[in-house]
Image (cartoon, rainbow, N blue to C red; front, top):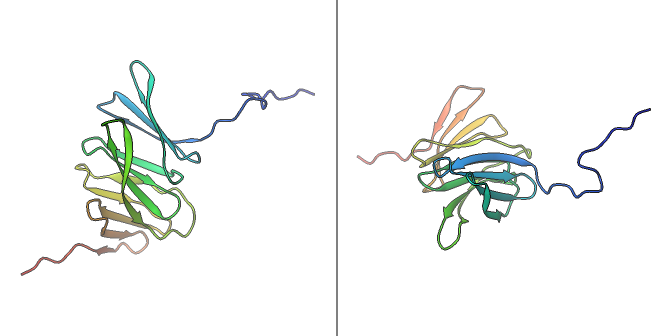
Length: 161
């Protein structure tokens, strides 16, 4: 009977987190990686490879999106929606939480999140078949697209006459 060899050996400490999302920023000079359960985001300089900063955020990380021009990071938090952070580089690189977007979650599932091209709008999936479009500056839903019915709900304010 042959025994299986475990690598790394069980006597070594385990990694603290599962890498769940990665993004290049600073025109590809920096790599930012988010870890699911450890709630950490770590950024590395690409050439030469060295760690630039490391930060633990308040919730688990399901998925994330980064917009380089606005230095905004969106994190699907696996609790009650997603959070927006601003990457501030002075005096030290850090993420500052500036908005929470509440999403009614039925099950603890990872949902995709993405920016539009100008970084002013977020698009999220959901665990109920809806795609939601959000205004990042106000935190409000702009539009909801429903999967099964082929319909949408427009939450945009009506123009005044």
